[in-house]
Amino acid sequence: WWRGDVQIVPASRGGLGLSLPPGGERPTSAEEPALTRLLRRWAERAQPVDPQALLGRVSFISWDVSSGQLQACTDPFKTCGLVWTSTPDGAWLASDLRLLVRAGAIVPRASRKALYQYLNFSCVPSPLTALDGAFKLPAGHRLRLDRGDVSTSPWWDARYPEDLAGSEADRTAELRRQIEHTVQSYRVAGGPQWGAFLSGGTDSSSICSLLSRTGDDRVKSFSIGFEEKGYDELGFARI
Image (cartoon, rainbow, N blue to C red; front, side, top):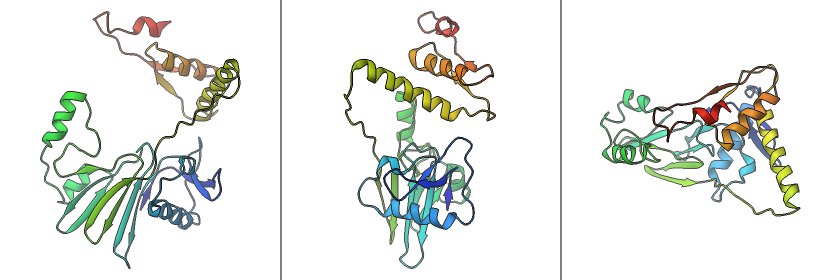
């Protein structure tokens, strides 16, 4: 079982990779067996996978009937998330908590740990979920079930190699080129209309500015205003 908008492409460092190019199509039925084998190899690796090897949004579950082993994987940003729980009858995995409840794998009882995290930090960090006994598979992680034993481990981690080659002007120009390339790659001519949250800060203002230069349509932006002047950003957004 796999989920995501991906297609097979040559990887930059040999082998196969997955990518989600703007406007890309889902793999054909002939490509899916190769895709399945590729995902299984990722899950079976003991060492972290090269970040360049997986591009795009994907999650998958692989069940080997002969060995009784189950493996699951999420992409580096968990854009196609998985939740799981373990019971005396085995492990249950799903793309949504509601499916675990409907299947009778968990009782819909609120998790006190998750509630504590939410009230203090406004989020429920992985592996916790809103329901007691259910867990999220963190981003860039794999899950293995082997004869009733469930384990999770990371297969991907962010890398930030230091690159100080060239002058400051060269690095500034390269940064701008990379940002422009990223924005233009996701806004394809004739594709869906894009918008952005605009706070008036450096990040959102830069993205909105580049979006407005890469298409003929007016960019839709969204801002949040507050009555308290110390929190209101509408003035910056209107600039």
